[in-house]
Image (cartoon, rainbow, N blue to C red):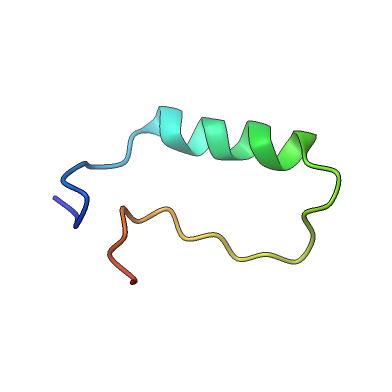
Length: 39
């Protein structure tokens, strides 16, 4: 369990992939999908 009380699911990663594929102005980003663990 992570800080926000939720574990990540494959759907979470899929939503991130869809967002990145549709975002016109996101380049060169490292996005942590870790439930706030790296705060």
